[in-house]
Image (cartoon, rainbow, N blue to C red; front, side, top):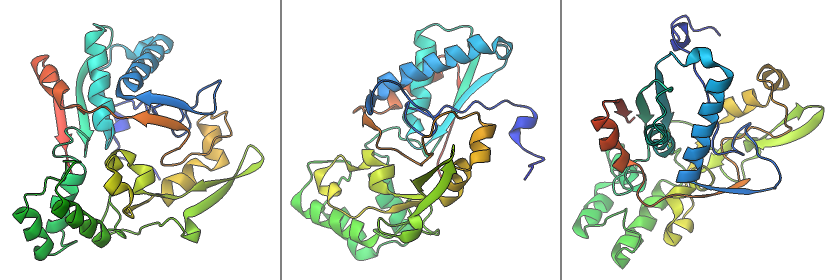
Length: 278
């Protein structure tokens, strides 16, 4: 339905599905490709450069780069590419990051443990023990006592939707998790929801965490919509690739320092920054 108050009454929105292989985006010449924080930023800068070359009329517009979750890496890294390339023809004004990965000392698992307590996902006994042993959930080489408490925490939240604790959760073996659609005359199947292991693999670098049943992600609405043939035709999608929340078509290596180091550079450069959570 039409939103009379949408931003695009006064703004243009460019979506980039990144890295290549995610969503509708694709690459040539190989069944699988590899990326990291730096290479994905370089590719995003190249895509933005191509966009302005094809549509130079947008060069005069203010540019704000936005994204959520792991785009807490993609967004500032792309801004940093623009700055370091002295791309004055890009009228960058600022960035917008929601629930973004920024600093692994505080983000992701450490934040989830804190949020989980204040949403009563676990009780005061476990909370007090975490405090007693001074468990640092960002520390991958943790004390044996903390490893045991970590397992207890994940047992308690194993059926919780990590992105909305009040909403439905899809599990690995749930029948309704798989959808189907006719795409370019061929019947294709796709996942309508993801486990957190599939959706946020960067949370599971720790081998201990890999053995824990992760929470799940509900995404039937967008996956059903983006796999409709009429939607694909409207977006001029030429591939037979299904649209899913995440993909195993690529290998991705996350950097150790996340993106917090870029923020002082953006601030010094006078760029506007909106960082929000929740």
